[in-house]
Length: 237
Image 1 (cartoon, helix red, strand yellow):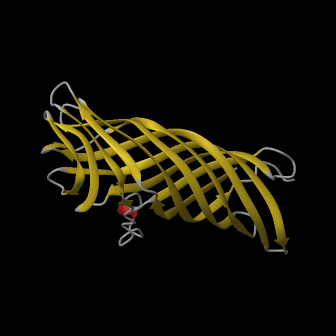
Image 2 (tube, rainbow, N blue to C red):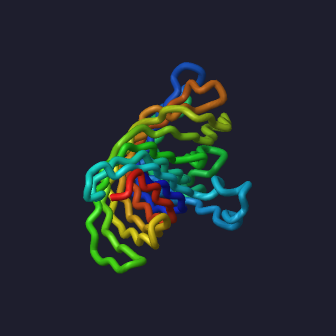
Image 3 (spheres, one colour):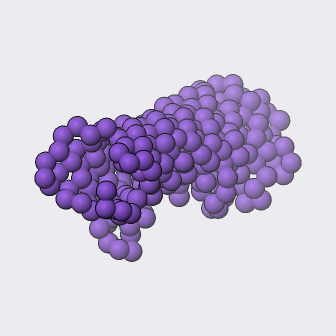
């Protein structure tokens, strides 16, 4: 078995985001090709009270065959996704019975959307390890992963002045592929880097203080991870 902990930086494709609420408000409009960015928050990651404030990754896995080169893993990737404020976006739809179909400066007072607590990927991964080089003290391996799971995210938003401080709930699904390198040091400790590409589909992002609004969008993310970990041998082979 093994456990890893580390941090990440992220990049996102543009996305088309639909906002709608036809029960307690009256709007249904779409952002076309909205830009977004991450927020690493690494200034105080070394403090025990701040370990989970930055964009972090935690993994628990098990290599189940004799060669220890095929395994399964549960991963929790805490990314942050922020639609960039004050960008010009083409907005199409209706806002309180007024049609809109034009390039618009999107200020935080109009719409602000951030999955910052966060854009969370909870996945089950199949893991493949290929040893590249070894000595008495070090083992260098290539690591590949494929996985999928739910988005258990926390979104903070403002839409037409209606603020929502957010709460954790199911938002959609994610699927990902990754590749990287693992350097085992002696028997119990290792360092690892991964580059992960993911397809992310938000289908259930609640909006507004009454959670009657809904935002939907999908995008691709690229995540660079730098991790350290511990091996827990279960036998002497």
